Image (cartoon, rainbow, N blue to C red; front, side):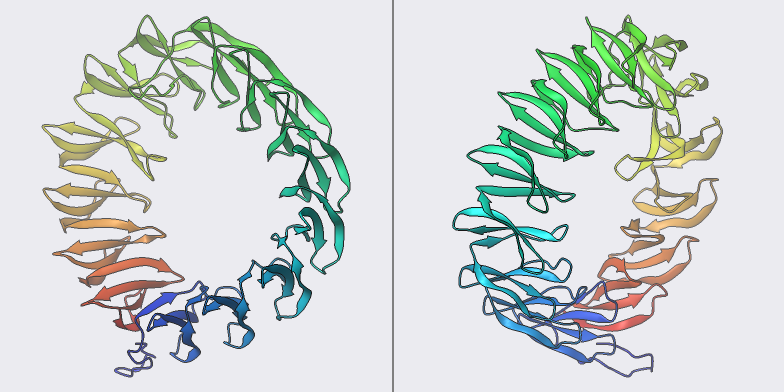
Length: 513
């Protein structure tokens, strides 16, 4: 049911089993008797529910399915192509393939047949062309239906910036979007393309080739891994090295083990000792340290914030980019440096923390200490969480206690500067200065997945939401809440669903199942 703003006036009658919000706020897909159609924001039926499938209505034309056949309509509900095809592909530059009676042709967004169905297969268009198959061979066709390349190859795949991988007699080569041969099919494989370079294989060895066909790295390695920050690891005879995304060999495989480049340095392990090379391949820190790993055997000897954790004689310390020891090897463990440049240190089962210069901010005095993170640990706040007498508090990066230890759990929220706290089984919100915004009284408080200025609340099994100041926008009254999309929030109460806006105003009355 939809309310038009006049009190009590029902615009949409309770007819539908389901309503799905499109990315277009004025077009909503509805379901009735397991059939799909569309209504607009005023409740007017745009397309009556008659299709067994309909796309979400974001793009025009809209793909629809009826009796296992596909057709097209526009967002005004006008039928462009009645459902009669076995398949219709995605439109690119106004053209898509379609399948009829087992054969493929081309159609445009107005439903006009560009190519009658006569090919065994047509792929999706990219860069103005698509591969097609005729009499068991593949060629290229344009969006106008013009044959760019007659069927020549056993397969054509991987359209990357207008360059295709072409396969003939189990050999791989490259052609451009005009069908011109860049490299004749001579390789055993052409794999992933990154940074304008294709991974090639011949006689079991790997190299790199540009999309113009120039061999940048001869096929001589046992393996080449994907590029990371412009560099790829190579392997030969059990040793590891690096090549750059420009095809330059940075260092030949000489290491027993390597890490990815971070802050311009990569670790190398030679004869069991760790050193570091720069992006030119120069050994800037000679191998002299032991492996430093956390409890999950994750390498800590990776530079972050100009510092890396290192180990000697079983103890942990910190080195800088020059290899100088900035924190002596006196600790039982040191965590990975986070985005803020902080790391947790442990000594005699007590915890403290340091910054990236190796300065001890808080000596190891706490029984428990953890980073304040969210987003699966990927985002860090500028404080840490500690425990005293089994209660949690927070201490900032300067070592000042900002929240006294009185909560059973503290977690940062995705709303900037806010912290979720729990006392017993109840949740509230405080700021990073310790100011109470929401007293702990809710069974749950959390962020919406795509709207960080509002937080949903659960009180006695009913849901509502509050804003970032802690103000209750909608008191807990709903059985379910969805996520915000284009300013609307899906809600459900007593088995009926509808939509409200960010101010809590009911936009679509709750009558849908």
